[in-house]
Length: 200
Ligand code: ITT
Image 1 (tube, rainbow, N blue to C red):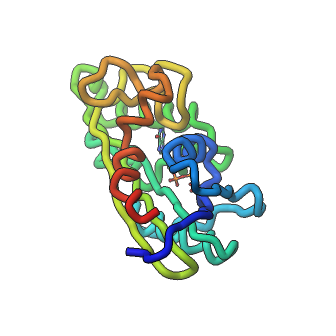
Image 2: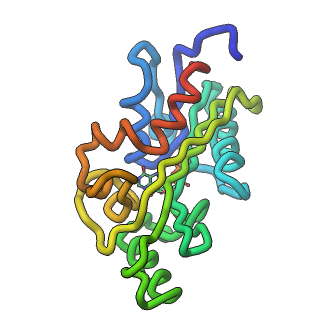
Protein backbone atom coordinates (compact mmCIF):
# COMPACT_ATOMS: atom_id res chain seq x y z
CA UNK A 1 0.00 0.00 0.00
CA UNK A 2 1.21 3.52 -0.79
CA UNK A 3 2.45 5.61 2.17
CA UNK A 4 1.64 8.96 0.55
CA UNK A 5 -1.90 9.96 -0.44
CA UNK A 6 -2.67 10.47 -4.12
CA UNK A 7 -3.90 14.04 -4.55
CA UNK A 8 -3.52 14.30 -8.34
CA UNK A 9 -4.83 11.53 -10.56
CA UNK A 10 -5.10 10.98 -14.29
CA UNK A 11 -8.14 9.00 -15.44
CA UNK A 12 -6.65 6.90 -18.22
CA UNK A 13 -9.54 6.55 -20.62
CA UNK A 14 -10.76 8.08 -23.86
CA UNK A 15 -14.27 6.76 -23.31
CA UNK A 16 -16.53 9.63 -22.22
CA UNK A 17 -19.07 7.32 -20.56
CA UNK A 18 -16.41 5.73 -18.36
CA UNK A 19 -14.87 9.12 -17.57
CA UNK A 20 -18.22 10.52 -16.34
CA UNK A 21 -18.82 7.47 -14.20
CA UNK A 22 -15.32 7.32 -12.67
CA UNK A 23 -15.37 11.07 -11.92
CA UNK A 24 -18.58 10.65 -9.96
CA UNK A 25 -17.00 7.89 -7.84
CA UNK A 26 -13.75 9.66 -6.90
CA UNK A 27 -13.38 11.62 -3.66
CA UNK A 28 -13.72 15.37 -4.19
CA UNK A 29 -10.31 16.21 -2.67
CA UNK A 30 -8.45 14.51 -5.55
CA UNK A 31 -7.56 16.75 -8.50
CA UNK A 32 -8.65 14.86 -11.59
CA UNK A 33 -6.90 15.05 -14.95
CA UNK A 34 -8.09 13.53 -18.20
CA UNK A 35 -6.29 12.22 -21.29
CA UNK A 36 -7.84 14.98 -23.45
CA UNK A 37 -5.78 17.63 -21.55
CA UNK A 38 -2.67 15.87 -22.82
CA UNK A 39 -4.01 14.91 -26.24
CA UNK A 40 -3.27 11.25 -25.62
CA UNK A 41 -4.69 8.32 -27.57
CA UNK A 42 -5.22 4.96 -25.83
CA UNK A 43 -2.43 2.39 -26.37
CA UNK A 44 -3.01 -0.87 -28.33
CA UNK A 45 -4.75 -3.37 -26.05
CA UNK A 46 -2.62 -6.43 -26.66
CA UNK A 47 -3.33 -8.19 -23.36
CA UNK A 48 -5.30 -11.43 -23.07
CA UNK A 49 -7.32 -10.43 -20.00
CA UNK A 50 -9.14 -7.37 -18.65
CA UNK A 51 -6.46 -7.05 -15.93
CA UNK A 52 -3.57 -7.11 -18.43
CA UNK A 53 -5.21 -4.49 -20.64
CA UNK A 54 -6.07 -2.27 -17.68
CA UNK A 55 -2.42 -2.30 -16.56
CA UNK A 56 -1.18 -1.63 -20.11
CA UNK A 57 -3.32 1.54 -20.06
CA UNK A 58 -2.51 2.77 -16.54
CA UNK A 59 1.25 2.30 -17.04
CA UNK A 60 1.23 3.85 -20.51
CA UNK A 61 -0.70 6.97 -19.47
CA UNK A 62 1.30 7.39 -16.27
CA UNK A 63 4.59 7.23 -18.17
CA UNK A 64 3.30 9.77 -20.72
CA UNK A 65 2.23 12.30 -18.05
CA UNK A 66 4.25 11.56 -14.91
CA UNK A 67 0.96 11.34 -12.97
CA UNK A 68 -0.58 8.48 -11.00
CA UNK A 69 -3.08 6.90 -13.38
CA UNK A 70 -6.34 5.04 -12.81
CA UNK A 71 -7.34 3.02 -15.89
CA UNK A 72 -10.35 0.86 -16.71
CA UNK A 73 -10.63 -2.12 -19.02
CA UNK A 74 -14.12 -3.48 -19.20
CA UNK A 75 -16.57 -5.36 -21.35
CA UNK A 76 -19.60 -7.57 -21.70
CA UNK A 77 -19.41 -11.37 -21.49
CA UNK A 78 -22.33 -13.34 -22.96
CA UNK A 79 -22.31 -17.01 -21.95
CA UNK A 80 -24.25 -18.12 -25.07
CA UNK A 81 -21.56 -16.46 -27.24
CA UNK A 82 -18.74 -18.36 -25.50
CA UNK A 83 -18.13 -15.28 -23.30
CA UNK A 84 -17.87 -12.90 -26.26
CA UNK A 85 -17.44 -10.06 -26.93
CA UNK A 86 -15.42 -9.97 -23.65
CA UNK A 87 -12.13 -8.12 -24.06
CA UNK A 88 -13.18 -7.35 -27.65
CA UNK A 89 -16.25 -5.35 -26.54
CA UNK A 90 -14.95 -2.01 -27.87
CA UNK A 91 -13.69 -3.64 -31.07
CA UNK A 92 -17.18 -4.92 -31.97
CA UNK A 93 -18.17 -1.26 -32.34
CA UNK A 94 -15.63 -0.76 -35.12
CA UNK A 95 -13.13 2.02 -35.66
CA UNK A 96 -15.69 4.78 -35.07
CA UNK A 97 -17.05 3.35 -31.83
CA UNK A 98 -20.56 2.78 -33.21
CA UNK A 99 -22.50 0.89 -30.54
CA UNK A 100 -25.62 0.50 -32.70
CA UNK A 101 -23.36 -1.60 -34.86
CA UNK A 102 -21.96 -3.54 -31.85
CA UNK A 103 -25.46 -4.22 -30.52
CA UNK A 104 -26.63 -5.41 -33.96
CA UNK A 105 -23.64 -7.76 -34.02
CA UNK A 106 -24.68 -9.20 -30.62
CA UNK A 107 -28.15 -10.02 -31.97
CA UNK A 108 -26.71 -11.35 -35.22
CA UNK A 109 -24.34 -13.67 -33.34
CA UNK A 110 -27.17 -14.86 -31.04
CA UNK A 111 -29.31 -15.63 -34.11
CA UNK A 112 -26.41 -17.50 -35.72
CA UNK A 113 -26.06 -19.69 -32.62
CA UNK A 114 -29.75 -20.44 -32.34
CA UNK A 115 -32.77 -18.94 -34.10
CA UNK A 116 -34.83 -19.47 -30.95
CA UNK A 117 -32.44 -17.67 -28.61
CA UNK A 118 -35.25 -15.36 -27.45
CA UNK A 119 -36.93 -18.33 -25.74
CA UNK A 120 -33.88 -18.73 -23.48
CA UNK A 121 -32.48 -16.55 -20.74
CA UNK A 122 -29.24 -15.21 -22.20
CA UNK A 123 -26.97 -14.87 -19.19
CA UNK A 124 -24.33 -12.16 -19.34
CA UNK A 125 -22.11 -10.06 -17.11
CA UNK A 126 -20.25 -6.80 -17.26
CA UNK A 127 -16.66 -6.98 -16.04
CA UNK A 128 -14.38 -4.11 -15.07
CA UNK A 129 -10.68 -4.24 -14.21
CA UNK A 130 -9.49 -1.03 -12.58
CA UNK A 131 -5.79 -0.47 -12.07
CA UNK A 132 -3.60 2.25 -10.60
CA UNK A 133 -0.02 2.64 -11.79
CA UNK A 134 2.75 5.10 -11.23
CA UNK A 135 5.15 5.14 -14.20
CA UNK A 136 5.95 1.46 -14.83
CA UNK A 137 4.92 0.34 -11.34
CA UNK A 138 1.60 -1.35 -10.59
CA UNK A 139 0.04 0.03 -7.41
CA UNK A 140 -3.15 -2.05 -7.56
CA UNK A 141 -5.38 -4.01 -9.96
CA UNK A 142 -8.87 -5.26 -9.04
CA UNK A 143 -11.90 -6.71 -10.81
CA UNK A 144 -15.63 -6.07 -10.35
CA UNK A 145 -18.54 -7.93 -11.99
CA UNK A 146 -22.29 -7.52 -12.33
CA UNK A 147 -24.45 -10.46 -13.45
CA UNK A 148 -27.53 -10.14 -15.60
CA UNK A 149 -29.04 -11.03 -18.96
CA UNK A 150 -29.49 -9.72 -22.49
CA UNK A 151 -32.70 -7.89 -23.35
CA UNK A 152 -34.66 -9.10 -26.42
CA UNK A 153 -34.30 -5.64 -27.90
CA UNK A 154 -32.37 -2.45 -27.01
CA UNK A 155 -34.19 -0.28 -24.47
CA UNK A 156 -33.42 3.15 -23.03
CA UNK A 157 -31.24 6.05 -24.04
CA UNK A 158 -29.15 6.55 -20.89
CA UNK A 159 -25.58 5.45 -20.36
CA UNK A 160 -23.27 4.29 -23.13
CA UNK A 161 -21.97 1.23 -24.97
CA UNK A 162 -24.00 -1.91 -24.33
CA UNK A 163 -26.21 -0.33 -21.61
CA UNK A 164 -29.46 -0.58 -23.68
CA UNK A 165 -29.24 -4.40 -23.92
CA UNK A 166 -28.07 -5.35 -20.41
CA UNK A 167 -30.58 -6.14 -17.63
CA UNK A 168 -28.84 -6.55 -14.26
CA UNK A 169 -30.09 -9.34 -11.96
CA UNK A 170 -33.15 -8.47 -9.86
CA UNK A 171 -34.13 -5.65 -12.22
CA UNK A 172 -36.69 -5.37 -15.01
CA UNK A 173 -34.96 -2.41 -16.59
CA UNK A 174 -31.86 -2.28 -18.78
CA UNK A 175 -28.96 -0.06 -17.68
CA UNK A 176 -30.02 2.20 -20.57
CA UNK A 177 -33.40 2.76 -18.92
CA UNK A 178 -31.99 3.48 -15.46
CA UNK A 179 -31.03 6.84 -14.06
CA UNK A 180 -27.22 7.12 -14.16
CA UNK A 181 -27.16 7.63 -10.37
CA UNK A 182 -28.83 4.20 -9.95
CA UNK A 183 -26.62 2.39 -12.47
CA UNK A 184 -23.45 3.86 -10.94
CA UNK A 185 -24.24 2.25 -7.57
CA UNK A 186 -24.70 -1.30 -8.78
CA UNK A 187 -22.48 -1.86 -11.76
CA UNK A 188 -19.15 -3.62 -12.38
CA UNK A 189 -17.19 -0.34 -12.18
CA UNK A 190 -18.66 0.54 -8.79
CA UNK A 191 -17.82 -2.93 -7.45
CA UNK A 192 -14.24 -2.64 -8.69
CA UNK A 193 -13.99 0.89 -7.30
CA UNK A 194 -15.04 -0.29 -3.81
CA UNK A 195 -12.01 -2.63 -3.87
CA UNK A 196 -9.49 -0.07 -5.14
CA UNK A 197 -10.53 3.05 -3.23
CA UNK A 198 -8.29 2.21 -0.26
CA UNK A 199 -5.30 2.84 -2.51
CA UNK A 200 -6.35 6.42 -3.19
P1 ITT B 1 -10.43 3.25 -23.16
O1 ITT B 1 -9.62 2.03 -23.56
O2 ITT B 1 -9.87 4.53 -23.67
O3 ITT B 1 -10.75 3.28 -21.70
P2 ITT B 1 -12.56 1.86 -24.58
O4 ITT B 1 -13.98 2.25 -24.91
O5 ITT B 1 -11.72 1.35 -25.71
O6 ITT B 1 -11.87 3.13 -23.89
P3 ITT B 1 -12.43 -0.76 -23.35
O7 ITT B 1 -11.33 -1.23 -24.23
O8 ITT B 1 -12.34 -1.09 -21.89
O9 ITT B 1 -12.58 0.83 -23.40
O10 ITT B 1 -13.76 -1.30 -23.97
C1 ITT B 1 -14.85 -1.66 -23.19
C2 ITT B 1 -16.12 -1.49 -23.98
O11 ITT B 1 -17.15 -2.17 -23.26
C3 ITT B 1 -16.48 -0.02 -24.02
O12 ITT B 1 -16.21 0.56 -25.26
C4 ITT B 1 -17.95 0.02 -23.67
O13 ITT B 1 -18.73 0.32 -24.74
C5 ITT B 1 -18.27 -1.35 -23.11
N1 ITT B 1 -18.59 -1.11 -21.70
C6 ITT B 1 -17.75 -1.12 -20.63
N2 ITT B 1 -18.38 -0.72 -19.52
C7 ITT B 1 -19.65 -0.43 -19.89
C8 ITT B 1 -20.78 0.05 -19.21
O14 ITT B 1 -20.74 0.37 -17.93
N3 ITT B 1 -21.91 0.20 -19.91
C9 ITT B 1 -21.96 -0.09 -21.23
N4 ITT B 1 -20.95 -0.52 -21.95
C10 ITT B 1 -19.78 -0.70 -21.29
